View: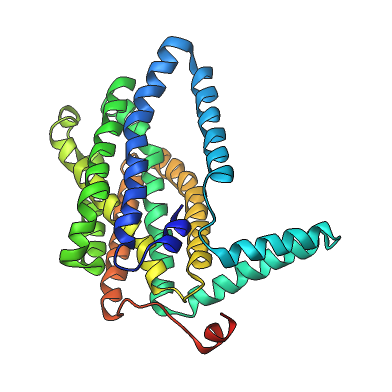
Length: 308
């Protein structure tokens, strides 16, 4: 979705558009736990899986048959490769081409200092958030003694404010303050929203705790879409989708490693996942500060210009 947004928006509206994608996710964050709870209560846990599978299949149908190709050059290339495979070129050359494309994107990303910093920030931030999220439900149940219904309300609360920030405020804030400042403030809000969670008094989860979770909702709603937007804005022209796709690979790898780390840390001490997440967001804060010296502009090396 992010790569598609990159193709159909200009640099001025891209961060806001990325925010809308995040807002859509936030709406799902509000509705999903509530619907899931109702399905489990009335039809059993199996129905939750069936409905989720059906929605994923519907998403697949919409993407394949109704969503137009945003990059005509990519469409021609895909048709050409498909035709070659039909003529007997085989899957080996196809896989080699995709591997070469991935390696090319990796080299391009780390040949630029701001892009490299953003890729690192992307991994660190995602790892930090997933690292603490995997422990959150356990913390709410075991330490705060929250019920499943109350946990659903917490998810809905975070999702509600995520929608407000990403769906309505982020575009206005970017026009007023710029990506660099919001990226920095997003990390600071996120630090407050993760580091102090295990220090919330047990009987104040739905008072003082909600203020901490509000910081989490605001911070993550700023950092995630702005990180992706800045990656595309700093990317080489005609390679923005490719590099953004690579950033999603980095993001996915962090989502694999984060739960593994979070579960181990929680087993050691329930404070640990949140302290580690907070320290990692501080590292992200220093990266955000380092990015201030790089003007936002798409890169256009000579080799790239010749190939377009």
